[in-house]
Length: 443
Ligand code: NDP
Ligand code: HSE
Image (cartoon, rainbow, N blue to C red):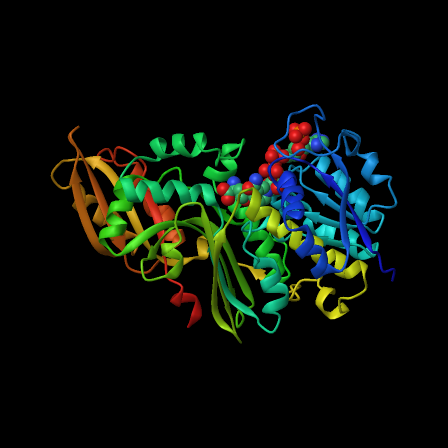
């Protein structure tokens, strides 16, 4: 293998992350190049609008709107795809991988939807596809699973993987304000994606969960086959009750493997989580991931899940690995992992309705005699037993009944809710949240 002194890099995209990569390579150039033993040169940048004013200034001649300036330049060793989306990004990633280039991406949507094809293309053409920044921004979760924890099989990985949702839940909890009020602030701080559904309906975090599930268990799970719920239905009453009962509400991605049954659970939803858990105390825009391996035990990583600097830190770490490969310095064992850690041929994905959990319910009802008894009767008819119940009178003559349950099955919860929402005394469809208990997966 050649031993390049100067490594040439092409950037697709010069927005938040792209400019961060340029800025932070420039800022730490001496230290970085000394560590890598190579000069890092971003020689081409492709954007949508080359006339756009940027915060980070680069020579005019390297920026263009023509993808061929990167894709048809044989001197470029590393291609970074930092445009996002799944159309143009897919096309250019495929073209670069077909040429055997090393491609680096922060694009969780693309990897979730097309990762299987892209990893295969990389392998077939002798290239590599790196994606540290795609999950949890600056937290090195991909390398941690692939490299540092390679000795392990993973019974449970769960985490907070969407900074925007975590920011909204944190503000609601601290200030007792509504989802809508907090969302306004999150928008004005620039936290919310242009397509808000990605953050608010859990899709962005689900993309990341799918990537981690593949990495840890070798199975590409389709988004449509997993439970994916965002935070829109959470009210400040839910957060208050959770607090009184010793919980916080967090948007959790959960990947649980039952090795005896050879089954895999992958889901993303808001959940009650005990305040004693480390991740319950990961607040604001921070992300956190808890990984339980059979050899290492439980390891928790916490850090910035988004933003220019944190995300570009991860992209640059992939660039560093790419440089090592180009210099022939890295052992094959470390990088032969465009294959996942696990063989997944017979691994079965659990159906969402098969979940067993404790639940929290909120019912908005007419404040009339016998309503609580009526709801209890329907729940009992579905073998769901209440653990705690609290009622709150509302000024409009209605009431909120907020209850937690003992262990029950998700399928029973679905049918109980269907029955309850059709009662004349019930004003809104019941809201329910799962109560997450990491111990349930680890015994
Ligand atoms: P931005 O919207 O800030 O930047 C996107 C860049 O890509 C812009 O420079 C834009 O050009 C360029 N671009 C977009 N579409 C095209 C196209 N069709 N042809 C040419 N250039 C195009 O996005 P981010 O930097 O925030 O995100 C980049 C990637 O990183 C995404 O996949 C995102 O999900 C991921 N990511 C982002 C994080 C963050 O905190 N921002 C965190 C983790 C991952 P122009 O400037 O001319 O419009
Ligand atoms: N919208 C994402 C978040 C950006 O809020 O976490 C980082 O992937």
